[in-house]
Length: 291
Image (tube, rainbow, N blue to C red):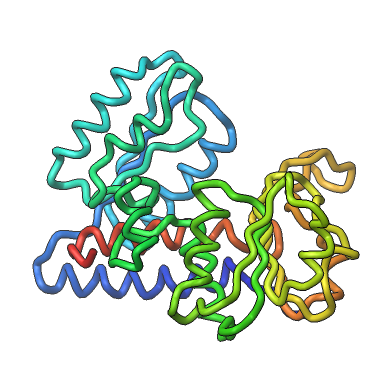
């Protein structure tokens, strides 16, 4: 069993981007600038946004954090999106989800200019992804594809089973894995909470991608010997073995599943760092007008 080290792979991508920033500066060009909008005080969202800002600073990107109060109205958030859309210095931006209940998330996503949508969630970008046209891909699925590519994993002709059909992870990764590309060229089965005989299907998977959002959902008997397992889940669960009293766990029961795998992502340190690396890569592409 080998760990698919997202932290190390993401660092190599960030190193490449740092070099690209130096090249841009040497030519007197505009350095990529990422903005993030955070509404409210959700602890996980704060952590994610701060990690993104720090990553920008580490590689020489410009970064802007706009932190709005929990009670911010939908109109105010939309006005912020409009301002960022029209700010020539901002190459790309994200609005961190989840948003407070008074704000329609889809309405906000659709208000972001597709060419600045570095999260890759705008319907125009998802449509281009489906048609295999150049676009800003959803950050987490793109991160998984990069993780497979950078670790030399051949996916052509393999059976890939995806558990979870969200618009942000499950559905787009099923599209990317089935495309005529490398990684890609896999035969894909997309499963979800209502799939019958789920374990029977997952045991057929050469590559199992788990993004169902349930801690410890995938057990040893659901995975075949030698499978590649990518765990997208991240859950903060109580633990008496850590100083904080909590531990981060995934959708897969790592300790019992890992010995059966040829490769598996850890949680934390697997998909998470790759999502941030992909977000930075998308910002660079937007800056260079490459999509």
